[in-house]
Image (cartoon, rainbow, N blue to C red; front, side, top):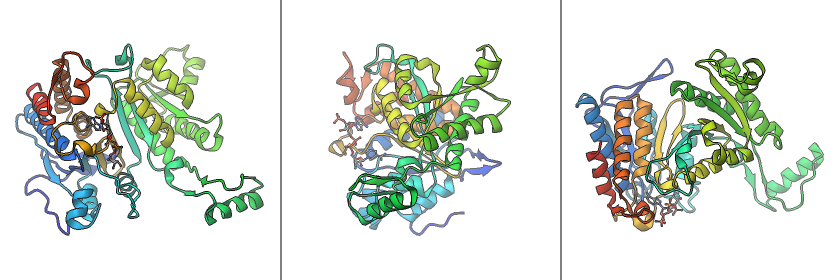
Length: 414
Ligand code: NAP
């Protein structure tokens, strides 16, 4: 049992456990909830209502989510003098699955970003972003429904590891001299320098997560996205290590694209998952031109950051894009947009991103029936053209709803 300095977990509700590498979920799991800053409280309220109603309806009251509100961000800083209290980290560690609204990134004060800190401290190495179209959402594409992908982005390595030195700093000069004297590599004077570490361990656990997901959800392919033609020992190695996981750990369940052409006449053997790779720049074209050829993408950190926002734009923007950060010990499901502070406490913004992250969370718990109900409710509400301001301003003949009214409409439509 976890011990907290200042928090009291809900009186009823039980922890999710982990047995033989899989989650063991009770009927009343304790779910830590970080409401978030700015518009966070509005969207968290609407999300809770929708998820609770879906679970009640799907399981006739047999199951329920035991929410456990935990402090983080501005509210925590004001009340407790800490941006990210240890109790909050302990709750997420102990209860394994959490839902999170957006958090303000403190300016100064030595904290890079609460989101980055959460990912690092809890080793949430996979950033998972499903991108699909909802009928009726305005999109720049002629046929946005053709794209339906889940992106697994490595979350801990690559140029995002934060190992860098400013132009002219003693660190940069020392490294530049080392490179010249010890490695025979010349770097221009006054260059800023950053390191791009990518390891077999970091790559393989991410690719493993993507392949397991594709197999569990019967997706047809996993594509390794890399820039290995240029960065051979990082991005090229990502591709090679990725294929190693596929062919060594999942041999009977996968076929590589090369094997497909060489040994199978281009026909996928029944039940096999196709593993292929694409150069990152080509991938940006592929999701526009041949989106139906891609189901699951596994990417290094930087490629995945760009690609997931580009894909989200194709289906109508970030307002409805869900996400999760998942590790072996814990998972946080979160809105992908920020706190939109100018709309705080106006009951105005779209809770869709957090609600859809809640859908991912229900699927992660194995509560697929409730997840499908939420999707149905959301689809029906958008089809009725009853939407929040961000969609209303782009849809002809739509009815403008507040954040809470949109949540209520989804709950009614479940
Ligand atoms: P933002 O909060 O995402 O807002 C930018 C714009 O996106 C808003 O002005 C609004 O556009 C639209 N938007 C955001 N959320 C929306 C929603 N739920 N419904 C409808 N429209 C929405 O980005 P920001 O202003 O750059 O960042 C604000 C703060 O959030 C910063 O402190 C930043 O560090 C933080 N942040 C946190 C996270 C996170 O916690 N994961 C992520 C990103 C940023 P319109 O003005 O056009 O209506």
